[in-house]
Amino acid sequence: MKSTSMLVLMGLVLSGALFGCASSMTGKEMVENPTPSKDFLLGPEDILEVVVWRNQDLSRQVVVRPDGMISMPLIGDVQAAGVTADQLSQRLAKRLLEFKENPAVSVSVKEVNSYNVFVLGEVTRPGKYQLKSYTTVLQAISMAGGFTPFASKNKLQVVRHTPNGNGGWKEVRLNMPYDDLLTGRSDPNHIVINSGDTIVVP
Image (cartoon, rainbow, N blue to C red):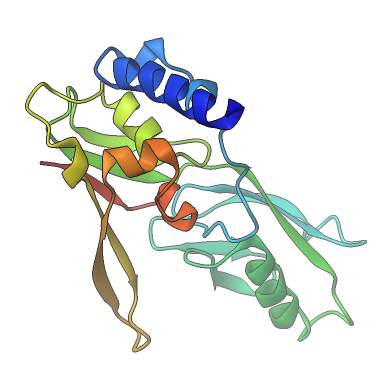
């Protein structure tokens, strides 16, 4: 009974907030901001801290360039965009094997600048939004000022591009009815938006 009452109460609060100004609703009124996981894919303009154990000359802070590469001493350019920090650590260690014995490399994300999403259609302020932490569909709509009076809330879609297995990309459209998002019926793996996602509010 308590959980049902809480869901109803949260739905009422959130409904009002999404039709109002974005600044009137914090992440805690919907859900806590999810913590970026190890699956976060690096992208252009992200600032990384590369530490090579016992080698200060190779350890440094780097910025992912627009072409997705970073530059490192000895090994030159390395592809960073599209992989996780752990995967990049392994990639750097493998390249350094040519110059160092058993190099231990760690990569951490100091600043996220590549997490961009688009919110289009019947929202108050459609456009591109740069995010600093993992964000849900409802939080992104709130940032865009909430729904307009003409929004078809239960026809929300998230347009996402995923690898097709052949080196290319395929477009996937995820249906996100507003009522399902409020009540938790949506797939939890889809509620948090990915960098490059487009939220369409018809």
